[in-house]
Length: 185
Length: 147
Image (cartoon, rainbow over all chains, first blue to last red; front, side):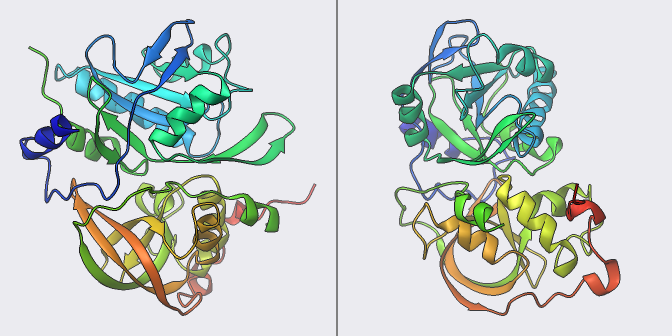
């Protein structure tokens, strides 16, 4: 937490008028990615992370947030800033290890999808205060869920840096992220 | 709609509040931030008020955070409307869609964004912004065709 606070204090000029977040988000979790590998809140490659709670075939907010994350990752990669896009599923019945990789890869090849058993997912939801509620069952796409919709910017250790509203455009989102994450040398 | 209303969840259920922040009282309209910022459904004057009420319900139910468009044009991202507990606050967000309200809460400025935690909706004037008189329904397909 202290690291996140220091980063926010000494971040670049893109970070304006900082007020601490009015809540404490983030924490440890241990889930399974689309390759069957265990992954925690820390990024094994040492990259900062964009974390979203959603599901791979979601047609609602995810269809805005996941492509936005992909565009931000690509824009920052051009500047030497490596960011890992991560989605924790809110629909483990639909996003299984063997099924969620392909739709996420269509959005971005580096996308990490995470799922797990009820207890493991619940730990992650609780850490980020995400609630998940089934809305209705679509005959074509299965259950439609309402769920938390902000994107979380985490550092490589999984510490929360800031929130990103999913309705911002790519340029503005890049500007915010750039204020927290420096290019790798 | 009753089902949707009853099942919507909050975009964030916030567990603990820091003492920082500035107490504010803001009068404005509860808006659909996606359509307002993206412009995909039309200009900013068309995606507010009565013309956009139905779409705002769909977007909110789909997870789009609601905003509070103040009279001076400032948009506040609403993190929570606090008179409801977390499981019921979605009902509040939906019932206030397109309404003109006066909200009392805490303002957090971060990354150039204005976030507000609404402690109390002091007044609710219902839908005052009668944009349907100029724009009809925006978008026109927000009322699903019966099959």
